[in-house]
Image (cartoon, rainbow, N blue to C red; front, side):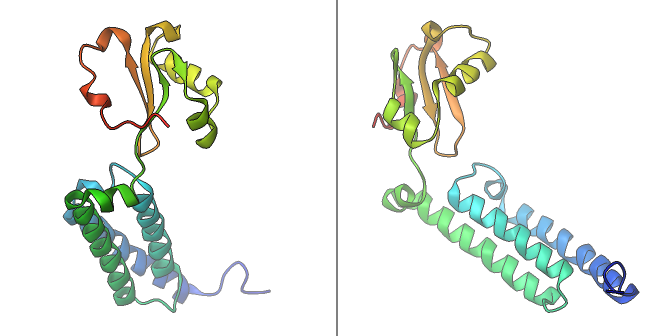
Length: 172
């Protein structure tokens, strides 16, 4: 019980040193691996990001994990993420497997109730998104798309001249 609040300077010093080594290493690793590591988040990228955080935490706080172990894990995670993203860029079948496709939540005056229920969204949620775009009515909305990364895109009717950006959006 006497070590609950303070167990000596050795463990504190180890945490300071490991944080000073591991955190900059992760920053350099992410900079080398490119913007994709921190942008365009899909489920695979999210898992990698959470795993980066857990690994960094273990490296910094656990005496059982050395800096070299942390470098190996972080490097392998980055390599795996690179391989997956390159494979997804070259193979449509693989990309479709790891990424979710965009879906219509609202299109040409109709709500896609099936997709809204599947993605746990309500009409109130979509109304809020429409208001955030400065619109007061769905009359001005051509489409609302739930993108593969979980973001919501709203296409205004006055912006619609061609619908080529909507190609590939799933209706069901």
